[in-house]
Image (cartoon, rainbow over all chains, first blue to last red; front, side, top):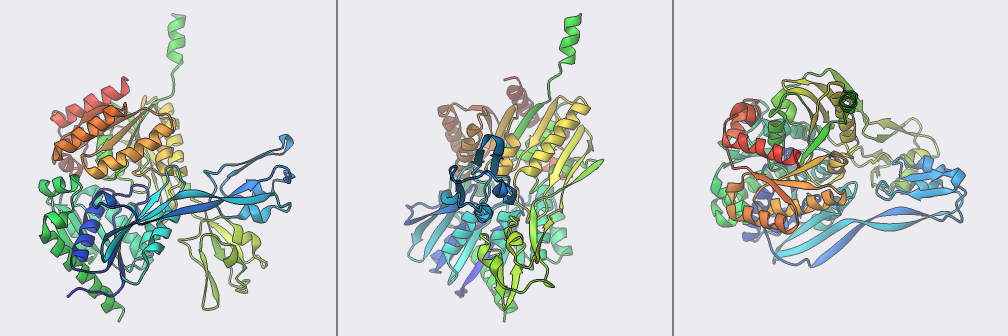
Length: 294
Length: 301
């Protein structure tokens, strides 16, 4: 029996390269094999990798844009109010020489300059921040990929759009960006439950602690998967025990698993026992979440 | 003699070597730590401010601590607010909502643009500094160390990275340290750009996986945009020799030099568990020797 109620689960980690993508692609694969309606959102917009493991052409591409100001030199009086209103230092002005320039790379598209201008000299245009691409994987499943354009100041807008595109009337898995800064918060804040993937090393533990503190302050329920178990030391286990954090699953350190992943193959396809285990983790997460909310 | 003196006085700035990787977990920090212990006295700058790790290995002193202001957040004064909702209409970050008649600002969505505070007819919104992030500077067993720690939820805009790098240059100069080793963040965003702008050498650490190659390509797009000549190192190359060959031929085809290849070696993890770099833990191992070769290759180019 698999849970079919709508739920959003984020797969995250403080440290990069601990196995978020390994876990999320395999859980996704195993769920869709069991005819679950499921969407995997690749929220790691700086380096989206989920589609490396699946093939297919996008059925839909959404351009994610932001508005940036365009200043009409003929109407501009070089009063400097837009420059004062800009919190991102994106407007460069030299009134004596009548020079005004928008630094588009620094603009966050807040619209403050347009509000500031009293002379109707500022209009806006759209610039691209990246794309959201939707790939059908099977009859009942698809991958929604957030892909930030190189050089954009923040992946957050593209991530938000991808999560919105996924919808919320079914099971949504979110492969989260690493770290605990804005992009992670934007992803985790949309999740009902967060699975943290870590490895039993000092670096893994340090970053896990930071993620745990962050999720606690957000009031998000979470559990932990330890990847590459057998490497490193026992400190991460002691930490989970002391903090009373749910250990959801262990994936052993195994060169064969590393080799499967390296070839862009899905662990749950090559080793179905891991697919079964991840489905159990999924069920445990759902049971926990719906119990808490009933 | 006079010429010689002039030459000696004309000490240029320290040499900066940045270690980055598109994909996380490729071994960037382990390699940076190894570089930092290959030679006497270096300046080590941990610019992976979102997940700073090198302090765990090196336990540096905190001789100096600076607050980094990561933008601002809007806060409503409910004594003044009439819940008119004008700010909701103006906010482009979808950060202000009406929750059952009460206007509420979401701290996590607020971008700090100040527009709401400027347009509020009742002056009920003020801006407060996000002041939880820190920069530290001190000594470690092989020189000086500067590192940043970004508070959870803050924007990794690259400004804290700039602050770490400025401080690193200042400290290196003050203590006559020739080499600055920068451990950069993963990804391709602002923090990466700030970590590599103006450095002498960039080393991209990748791994022989399809994801590794995919991320390497995106990282190269960033690096070449800034007119830097990158070096590539394939870490854990023996996990998938075929993939390693693919990465090598991709690099050759794109005119990018391979600095070296490092095998998978669990003693790198053992070293970490014992709070040592691999060069300190097993100085005579093949891994450590290869690290030394890579360093020489990059810095003598």
